[in-house]
Length: 398
Image 1 (cartoon, one colour):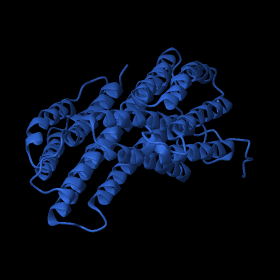
Image 2 (cartoon, rainbow, N blue to C red):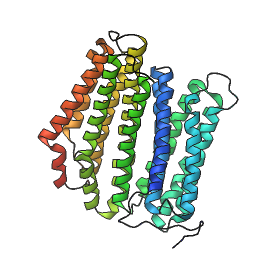
Image 3 (cartoon, helix red, strand yellow):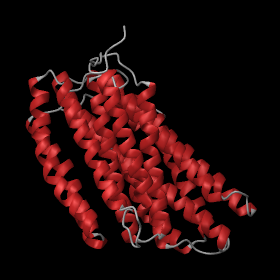
Image 4 (cartoon, helix red, strand yellow):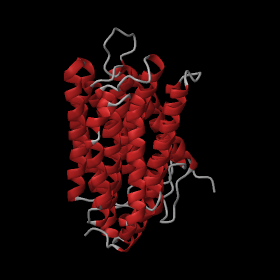
């Protein structure tokens, strides 16, 4: 039956991710790739911080539509039209991201374009969500969340206008007000989750697409032609890093989390989904992007300098800090879903941070090889001791 454009279709418990939602994910990950390009222009601490702010704003824009698609089908009627409009706004923001902190005169005000796109995405999401909500609790949650969104719009626009360090501070405030306020609001009135399978699948797919996009970044970093055997080796090591990231998420971990969600009491589902997916998956996505940045820096050094040169501090932090972030996100996800701490991700993250010191003294290619060894050992340890698999029998967090 054809549904009119102004109507919508409520999702069922067995609902799965639609092709249209995967299309949305591709636009989101394209924006993340542009953020990596932004950080790669002038790798430095301030640039990486600004990149993180952009990742935060992009992630919670994507996450909002993962929740909306769990309430009403994203590929039907009014929701499809609204989501496509949000995709267009997100695409505009992605194109403007390399000039997010505009240092030179440009006929297009990139910071204002990003601010306007973010407001379009968020306001449209709230409007659509309120339209499809038939639950008094969900409607109350949405109305409470409108308050921090309205407050966050002020520093968002102000930051785009003033630029520089003030923009960095004000856009960080946007994240704290909008997302922090929304989390406080959900503490009073939790979100409602209709389909566990759909929500878990959305996050699985965005992780695998992000890992895939990181491979594309590595390929672009290698250049149109392979300059040397060292560049080929570095690209292959980057591929092995991606395989390790894939295995750490999809070998047991993803199925563990979904099974925990499936057995959780329905009143707790919204809270667990918010904590374990919306918040705990953010460090994983950020970690993947930072690792892609670090590998690009290794490739750039091999192409333009030499195999004996050391990787700069920003590159080392991106590689090892990004990998540590990824492991922290996995450990946090289990902690918030199960109520217990899995030691392998925590210990692995600490080891990676400690390895930054010797990696700083090694040639760039050797620093990347050391990261590969560390991640391979992490995969082996988690498979050998099976602490994550033991969570299958654990009770969800109460």
